[in-house]
Length: 384
Ligand SMILES: C[S@@+](CC[C@H](N)C(=O)[O-])C[C@H]1O[C@@H](n2cnc3c(N)ncnc32)[C@H](O)[C@@H]1O
Image (cartoon, rainbow, N blue to C red; front, side, top):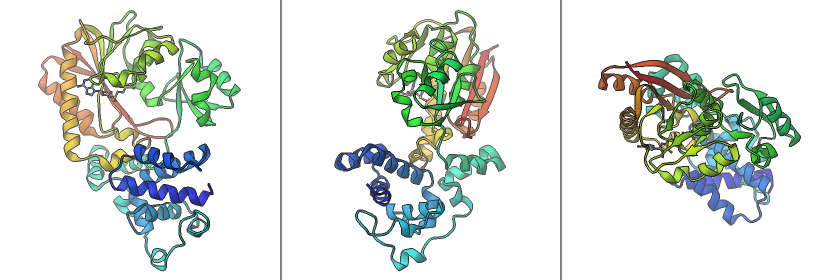
């Protein structure tokens, strides 16, 4: 495909997403019908679609319309690319711009430049005051690719050497001693020897920092109550010298890859039908808006509603309440979200403390999205 034809495909996919189709499904649907597209074409089209989703609102203002074609036009303008080099009408390129398209479009200003719906601009401003604009700006750009070195298999230097042998360059990351930011050839990670042998896992650096903060006395009994794919389960198991860690999730299907991942990593992970007994540490990495990681899943910021966010608050409170019944006296209840909205973070801890007598919060920590890692929040709760 020519570079211009890739933009045209991206515009068509954006139309499907705007009509309500989930982004991943729209991309797969397109790829199935695009036998002519090679792997580089698919990757480039995907990048255009995700860039547009991250900056939909500002690109729509800049392009003068909400449709895929206008959003791509706006994105080109925002990126300083002359639209006439793409909208040529030649081959499979998008048709040339009309006079109206040339005349339409403005520089995005104010909240349009935040690339969030108005109500979320308000929530972010209420959470962070003057810092909110910087956070919104960080969410408009691509996230770094970050690895966790699995200390059960390799140390940092050995993992870096092994990655280098596959042409993957990395830099150390200030958020965690196990984190490496990929600086070149990130697309090679999944096929690399280091990844296949379990020496590294893909994991955001702030997510690793949240696991690093969990107090783990020797021999601690640890329950990951919202284990999902097991990113934090495996990080905690590595800190325990191999585990064991008990993993559970309300949706068991989310943990389907965990046994294979644990084996590859050399970690012992128990997957009981329901968690039994009392634990020294219960981690609740609760379902949330994902706002701290919207640069990885940008569609979510346009689809989230106030009703859904309120539902998430109830779910988060319910999971915290359940965790209290699984924690031994003196143990630590760890709360975590990948959100930058205070309603999902401080407010959940404050209402927990108001609901439960005799508990105190021993740690609260926010991580904001930046070049090192995603936005995260964690808090530690103990019964007095
Ligand atoms: C943020 S994800 C977990 C990510 C995972 N800890 C990791 O680091 O890869 C939240 C998980 O909570 C699960 N979940 C939803 N409701 C739950 C509930 N009531 N109890 C436990 N887990 C729940 C979801 O299925 C989802 O897998």
